[in-house]
Image 1 (cartoon, rainbow, N blue to C red):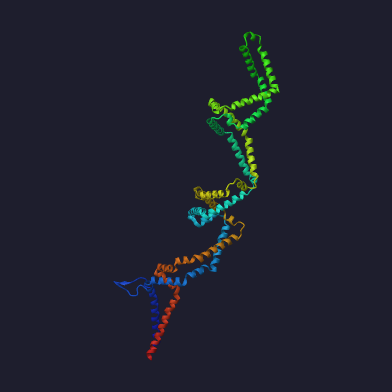
Image 2: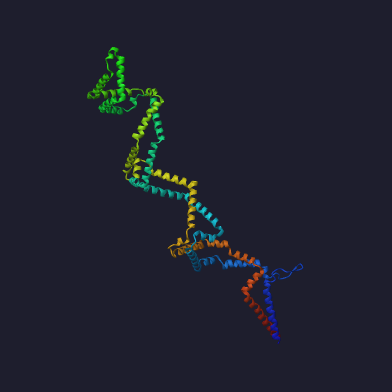
Amino acid sequence: MKFIIGSLIGAVIGYITNWLAIKMLFRPHNEIRLFKFKVPFTPGLIPKEKSRIAKSVGESIGQHLLTKETIMESLCSEDMNKQLDSWVQSKVSDMGNSENVVEDEIKSLLGDEYCAFLQNTNNNLSKLLIEYINEEDVKQGIAKYAYAQIMLELKVKPQTICESELYNSIKNKALNMVIEYKNSEEFYKEIQKILKDKVAQLVVLDKNFEEVIPSTMISNLKVYVYGKRYNIAMEIKKTMKEEKNSQKLRKIVGETISTKLSPMIAMFMNVDSVYEKVAIGIDEFLDDTKNHNDIALIINDIIDKLLKNSMSTVFSELPGEGIDDGIEPLINLFTTKVVDEKFISDTFDKLEGKFNKYMSIEELLEKIGIDYKNEIEKFIKNRIEAMAKSNSAKIKITEIVSVMINRFLHMGTKSIFNGKGDKIPQSVSKVALELYNKFVENKSADVIEVLNVAKIVEDKINEFDVAFSEKIILDIASKELRAITWLGALLGAIMGLLSPVLGSL
């Protein structure tokens, strides 16, 4: 009997001591004091050493469980890639079947942050594009491309350009503008000013007309007069027969008879009879071809005498209105008879004809002797530099970016996937996986290091309430702790049994 009682007492003592020891790990949660004295073993071991335990657990997990290599291996695992692939394809397919536009999808993701996101995207893309254009390599690339395109255009035949609709449109507009200017008051005044300036210069030189007018022009004029001697004689004859001129001649005959002859003789002279005889005599004189040469010589002699007059003398005797009146017919002659619409059109056609004789514009420029390659290169470079730095270009780029973003946002998500089947989801998933794995390989180590798993675990354990920590540990190890309690009872029972056995020996 004493063996049974000893064994029971030992079992009870073992059970109670182990149970109490486990409880004292957590209880009491806080320090207990009687008067000014601290009660021993308060608080419990775990509450008392909470910070040290949290630090130890965090270091153990960070150094041995959730190591950098372990996390990276898990992030790059086949299972993770499959899940990411499935998720991306599912999301992209949903977008492909949606009736929404891109804007709706982004709004659903960002909510109230959408407007700020849109503005930032617009600003950042515009800034990025402007900075990109201002990079030296980019400007050189643009200049090189533009130069190559211009050089290709210069190899085109001029005739091809002249046959183009654009060229003919420009040509017709240019012709109309030239003709309009030629008929304008502005052109008239400009020609008038030029002629007045030339007359003023000639007056100052104090030369006669013979020195100013080219000798070939004077010779041609005299030859023209001699060649037209018959016409001149007939024109004089015709002029004499005109009513106003015949009346003047009759008046001259009458005055001559009344003033040059004695009154006695004049009484017997009939003015009309005398006029008729004079008119017949003049006609006979003008009809005689021998006299035509004399008429031409007389006219040429008059021309010679006029040419010997000093220009300064002639112009000084003319009033200002007289000079203007003399210039006006010259201007009218120049604008109506010389530079008429046909002359302008013919000039354009002749220039175009000369232009078309060349095999290429490049050949034409080389023939002229212009260093066009260097000039084109300088022009392109200067224009690109000016454009890249100008505010107008920045404003235009911002507008273009805004328009492009707006167009993209209002595209239906269906239209992006239209006719592509599963290709787009698969492609997007492939790109997403590549980016994800590249990020994990290149950057995840830095992220995990910054993350500091040990510190996170330590901080989290320190945040737990002691009762909550107790509950977690008991939930995890309740079976094991009960086993330890009953093991204490078993060991107590054995010790209780052994004690009387050893005593009897």
